[in-house]
Length: 166
Image (cartoon, rainbow, N blue to C red; front, side, top):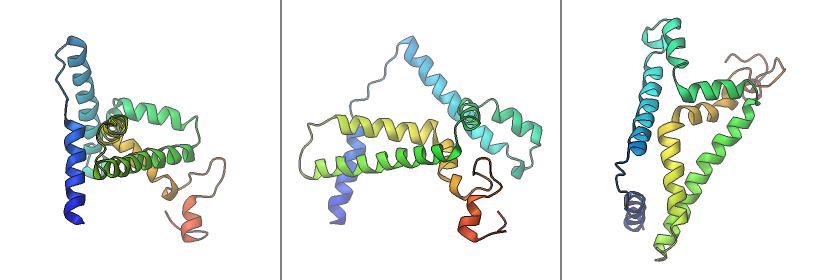
């Protein structure tokens, strides 16, 4: 059973990477550079935390140079935060369910359906590269302090009781 599952998982990874031809047009190269820049800035934002000895000003500067952080920061001030928790759970659930579905398709020998593989490629690549830090932050919303809108209560009071420290 474990050997068959390993073959299915390696088959999924192989099919997800199969047929990827490098597009050398100017717009494709600009897109690659943009995504690389977004990833580098996200890593730099994580590295310039005050935990590692950086000042608050440096942390703020790096935070507001990250496109994904700016989008997340602006949208959380308008949309309730539990909505992003639901969105994060849905994104991860779609990726896991699609992986399971593609695995079942491969186990049964059905390899002509490409839409689940394309969906899996898109969800995994977007979650792992661009939205990784945001999805992690969204999934941690229920255990953060003071996340209930217009209330002095926090979700941590539901987990640890009233007056619990964060």
